[in-house]
Amino acid sequence: EPEVTQTPSHQVTQMGQEVILRCVPISNHLYFYWYRQILGQKVEFLVSFYNNEISEKSEIFDDQFSVERPDGSNFTLKIRSTKLEDSAMYFCASSAEGGTRTSSYNEQFFGPGTRLTVL
Amino acid sequence: LAKTTQPISMDSYEGQEVNITCSHNNIATNDYITWYQQFPSQGPRFIIQGYKTKVTNEVASLFIPADRKSSTLSLPRVSLSDTAVYYCLVGTFAARQLTFGSGTQLTVLP
Image (cartoon, rainbow over all chains, first blue to last red; front, side, top):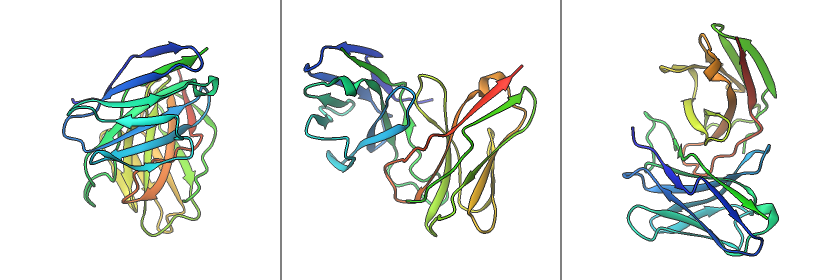
């Protein structure tokens, strides 16, 4: 069964450093997402990406964040200057285009996550 | 965006049927109801989705009354491995961002 993969599984960084989290979405999917989950809290939407551009983003996704699809398979989230409060589990997800009324709307397939620890 | 309300936690025993109810009083005409499951330190996983009446798949059933103001996820004969957080989400067909609430922590006991 195809799955979303993410690397690394755990990233430790110093405050103020840049980090890049990597994801390989399911190959025939066209929509890509990043979510985060601070320990013990809700899963929060960060950004969605389609056709090589951001289609939606949340208030959390400020200028410190950027996303990129550098090639045909990878999807990355960059945090330019990490803060302590960026410590969280970051999940990548992907979905097929649209969805129809006979299939799941926007069923998103999540990766296993990258645990980011900012010291 | 329709607000959802679910119990914070539920306990069950292996082999029992578990029903988790979600309240969404201000659901809109175009909204679908979707349930996701999340195990510790893993990403959420889609379980089931419906618009009205009853939907069943190999994992669960989803019951939606005619007024659609609530929905019930039914897990038949749960096992220890069904211990997870279950989220009820309500959103439009074209929605791209998923809005997760606090979910229901289901603990299955031996």
